[in-house]
Image (cartoon, rainbow, N blue to C red; front, side):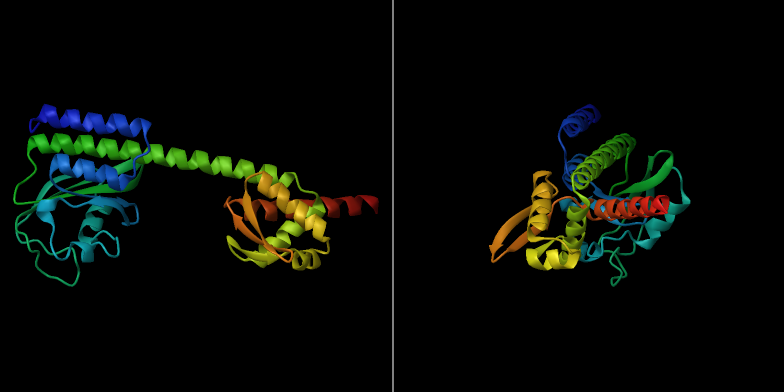
Length: 273
């Protein structure tokens, strides 16, 4: 399996699985790292490392320290910003340690390749490959190109999934909020204000008092939101409730709906005059 064909078959297998199953990028890096035999770091446009894998042969006492801040070392980041194409098989005889408090790397002869990752014709991320002792051969470069394509496609797929989930969240929050009467909407707005976060305990009487509504109005509004799946609740006794917001768009949709209600009511008053 050390042949080029064998390794491409392994990469094809990973690509086929990732196309049908959501694979965390860190796990994907682990698999690719074992095939190519080098360290892999995937980072954002801002230089934040969000997935990586270290080859067993290149582990050192400073590995965890250098990745503690999860930030790409400035030297590589400057290359990433200045180059629009892949930088392949660059050699450093006496490399500086990527951990800023250590000057000399424990390994000699460092080779690295840096691949930009594009989305909609914009450079949105990058992939850094590092190896010590042996340079990246022509076969390795082919595998690295293939690896870059796999990482790029997986990132694109995960971004599309994130956008789809976000769209579903927005739609669910809109439907839930639109089912509320104005009094219920004010009750929910007051409840969210008292909650002050994504979860906690509230007292229905306090919400009713703050929103100038009734206990039953508050209770009914919360039941509607729970039925819509945007919150979950648990009774705490003596008219108290534990609330957890399960839809991150709820706050924004409540704010927008309340703003629209006020705008319509103001318009109606002006028309009466």
